[in-house]
Image (cartoon, rainbow, N blue to C red; front, side, top):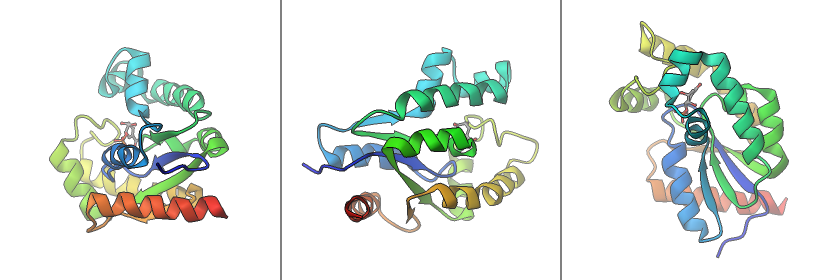
Length: 180
Ligand code: S3P
């Protein structure tokens, strides 16, 4: 069984594979680790879907719920947390996550992200469900990228890589990181 010195928080833009890779990573780490999907916890707390929170209560309320959930999951041991794409926009969330987790940024190119998001459907993602979603995605991507990079402990490119290769790379990089 693989033992890490910390929990793991996966960050990155929508469509970079945080959920898929997070679940696979937990499988690979073995029985003691648990996968946590922050968006799911937010929906559980609110009793409604993320699009419903945005449309009925607004983004400010969503971000408050996100911060509360982040504060709650941050101290947990042996967890892999899949953060929402906007979680690390709030410095307090970053501070909470950093206490106990290694922060891993999953990176993809804007073209890959556009393909994935447009295939999945934009309705699930209210931050880009605007008049011109493609422009909105591009704008947010360029705005957020420097921030993602500045808070990450480890940066993993997911571009043209098989999921298994990505997970193995994460485990390898975490082992080095934890030795430092
Ligand atoms: C958001 C990303 C979403 C979700 C919410 C807001 C964002 O999570 O938290 O719709 O601001 O980027 P995913 O990155 O898991 O899609």
